[in-house]
Image 1 (cartoon, rainbow, N blue to C red):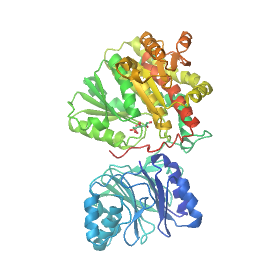
Image 2: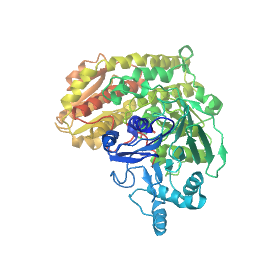
Image 3: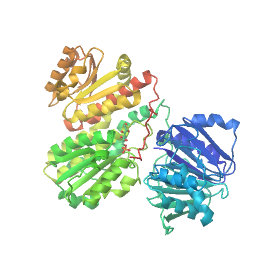
Image 4: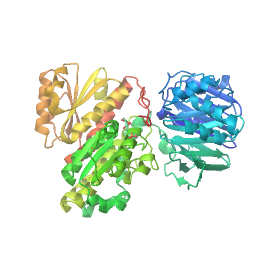
Length: 607
Ligand code: F6R
């Protein structure tokens, strides 16, 4: 949510900044802007290409600059509201991700002191506050720290001044900032993606820290101006992983990566002969885990739906009671937590504000906190007591696809881990481990049907409503399938547990309201076919996701997509794949930009 990128070095910063912004576009595309200390600023409404188009008319050059992509919170997506924002003298420029909650009071105070504001954003107060403190402190770092001590809310910022062009100051509180450490050049960004093509050496800032970079130095301080020493970390992602590699969209590339993602999530973690999973990230807390008697899973959106599948897995096979809740609700309840409770947070980005606050609340109440996180070094990864990294590689499409597949796989590994600590037998453990190993090949057979799935999606692409229904393990997949269609195609889609149809939703069904029914040959198959019949009796069209070999379902459904057989617990890892492909082709047929759905951003770092 909002992307920040900054460069200081010996090269022309403009192409570097634009390139960095392009690779961050999944974080926001309401407006884009850059400020280059030696020459000035350019801003444009919309995505980075609009900014690039303006460059020939306003050429700017310089070896240091800050850049921003906006996902609007305060103020409409206009050029005046685009970052970077500046002080009265246009000397100090600021880019910001987060929300300054007390900006109204600060703005009123600054106006009374004679400052003039050009935008309706909360961010602009930061530039004026720094200007205000600079008059007294006469030192940019000290003025930034003084300004930050005045604000309430969240921020990841980068600050540049015309008077000290080589220097850039960054700070974070609740919104991520990472430093990239190069040779005679240094970087600041919201996440490592734009840094990767220049250096793999990074330092993650922590909340309440300020960093000062020049081409040849980087220093970190606390908000009390105490120096902090922090080692660099090496990122193991490749530049190719953050490119489309010949696909039209990241979403398609990432769906196609499903088999490889499972291999990477499970690498070195399955001991098939012993029916065990070996999770290095949980070793430190393995003995404590034996004593735990309750799990609360917290996540948002897709990650929350992964948690719902986890509930079925963990209760059935590990025998531990599980509750699943969205982060934004959990933190406002009075959850009953004790030292035998695990709070399991699921998050691709590791930065989702609501999930993070849920972890902090659970920690205050004594829970053991675990994470299933994709982004290494992210805030959730650092703040949880222990966890499982997904190793799914960077996910660039705003709609989560491969991360979901990986989250489900990690939950299966966790189920095996906790189950074998408890009552799960060796033979059940072995069976689960063998079936997990077989998943990549099974996904491959689904991906091989992509043209057939495209034809079905195109056949239904004129529909304005869609119902998704499933039962048991595939109930959350109905929810996730509907979410995928909603977010990339903007059409009305609802996910339901099939048993709920008679309790209301069936009223919506007619010949224009098709249903995607997940009807595998499993313990709930008979019930699912009854539900399909109820839809057909109301003239509703049905696409069935069925188990390979089930041809009789063709008598019931209008269209059928087959998935290979696996154990019920792992079936969501297969059934989600055709639903992701369906949503992708449906949206592309309707001319939507699937990688950049309107109003959304990849990493939701504000509440
Ligand atoms: C939907 C989607 C979102 C995220 C949610 C949580 O496709 O991507 O619903 O799943 O914003 O994000 P993370 O997993 O980064 O915490």
